[in-house]
Image 1: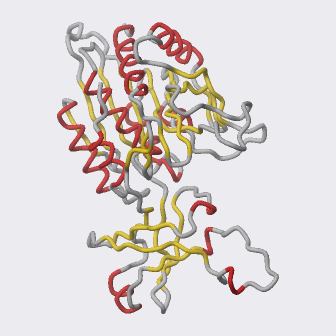
Image 2: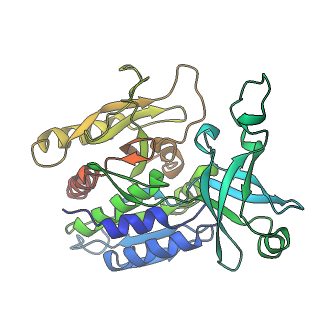
Length: 358
């Protein structure tokens, strides 16, 4: 299995914040259509690819269902105010660390689809003008966008609610790749490549690129109520704190060492039997391109809100007959180890599942 760099690049660079996923959904649907028997878009905007059973057992036999979910939306902003000088004030959609946002380039996508480049800066004095004042960490509400255009041009082009995303080229960095919103476009890619590699099966496989995960798993909740899978596998990025300042105890994962099987995070606990089955398969395949990392807990002693992979699982799997597992790709800042191990792992896991279900 080789990396489809152009597909992953397109997934990374296409903008799509919660409630504004039209462009990224079109990219995903185009890639998904030849890999499945049917594509649907539900009312909230989830892109659903359905692979019907191959070689079903016969009339009257129950059809079992496996669901894979990876979210298509990215963290970003909506324009909440355009001031008289043409500067934009922002409403975040999803959680940012404001320390990472100073002097970032952004793209403002207008209602008619025009993309305007801008610079993101915090309000306040430049350091040259500070007299005995200590610079403070910026706050989200202090950020503004400078489009470098006359105020009247900005006011004519930009409306309240227009989408603002980080502008970042997708590129190789050493043995890895770097780009924006690899949480969770990398796992959308993994899901698509697993479908491409999947063999025949006697069950129904439903692959879903969900919407509005970053603001409360809204697309996943709709999928749970509509599809009620027997087994669900949620795919997302997770932390790799194998960096200066990180401790072994809190490293979570290490970049490049394979897929992580999540035990729990601050909002959900995975099905232990599913995790055990994933581990057994991984150990059998450890010498065949499917390395994995030991089961992980992504949480603090005092629970906090997190957006780890397994947050989607209880929502995707709210049927009492559903068993959920969580596979994660290790990420460190904007660098992701997408060395195809997660693709290989998911494909193998799916083939095991579809062969085991009665």
